[in-house]
Amino acid sequence: MELPDLNIAHLLTQYRDGATTPSRIVEAVDAIIENEPESEKIWISRLPLERLLEYAAELETQSIDELPLFGIPFAIKDNIDLAELETTAGCPDFAYLPEQNAFVVQKLIDAGAIPIGKTNLDQFATGLVGVRSPYGFPTNAFSEDHIPGGSSSGSAVALARGQVSFSLGTDTAGSGRVPAAFNELTGLKPSRGLLSCSGVVPACKTLDCVSIFAHSSKDAALVLEVAAEFDPGDSYARQAIAPRSNVGTRIGIPRPKDLEFFGNTEAEILYRQAIDQLQQQGATVIELDFSPFLEAARLLYEGPWVTERFVAIESLLKENPDALFPVTRDIISGGAAPSAADAFRSQYRLAELKRRADKAWDEVDFIVTPTTGTVYRIDEVEADPVQLNSNLGYYTNFMNLLDYCAVAV
Image 1: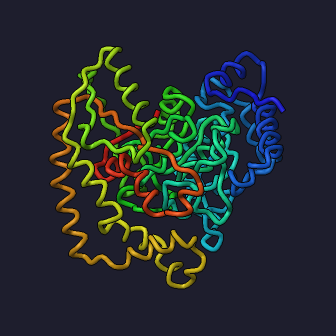
Image 2: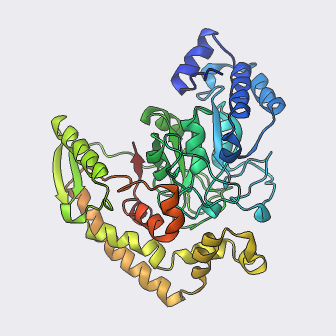
Image 3: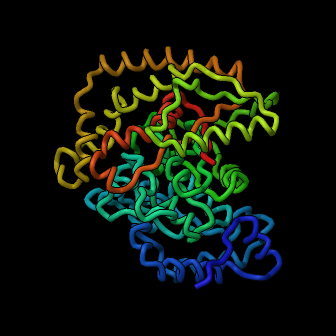
């Protein structure tokens, strides 16, 4: 069937003009998902059409002018709670039925958005590849041979395949940006605490961020504006701060010796073309010493932060280790080893690295890196799942540890 245009601005215009209704849109979305065989690996669970029509009917009694996301269908990564469906975090034996919606999900629904269901992910949000799920894994929207990216694989592919208007993911090491890059989307990771993590299964609780997938930066900004309300129930939530008023066009890039494309010459050419284009548009390009950023990135899995992943599912790991995807179990089990002394030493080192990295903002307004240095085929990841996954975090891991916001475009 012909796919409807689910772009947020287009849909809102169609609603205002009376060209369509939320009921028609949810019927179309449900039919699209039902008719695409790949959908069973994109979605872990979905609301039935009857429930979607109830959401739509309620909206049709309200004013579109009061609801900024009136009738906009969206997907939710299945480590974020939707009270009407189980949360699995990609692990059937972990599944539970939440008593209420995650804070961010509720804000979006209150603004008129319609939740379609819960999407697939690398189990317990541990991975950047998108293939570590007992539910199978979604096919990359552009290549059957290549990985979809993770851990928010289903949220990215559902959007890229035109099944929703936007989607929610999470990002602890790049999970909201890598799948965006691999499926030609905008992936927004705010700084920690701007979007509430209440009702989100923790991966690394001190680093976790809810992320947004959209077809454009404009759509992502609209969703962020709706969802970014301070949540006093989230101990890591923070009030939004005013943006810098003097932002210019000084672009920071890594020194040539700090760039890594893992043998992908095409990716290197594309990155350099992007920098050239920015310069042609008037940007001043400044090379930065990227060593503190890269050393911070290595702390995520080489340091004690993997212990947070262990703490989040410790009882399941001890009582039913076979419930975990094998590579996921191996990674998270390593979190039992670091000591308290290791944790403090790494915190001290991270503070030193952040002080050095923060100095870059005295010189530049933005930093532009590749989202990833390359993209891998599925068979390559199956042959070397840990190292290739680590390679994908080369430009993303430090963002979370240094608490910077990031956008993949």
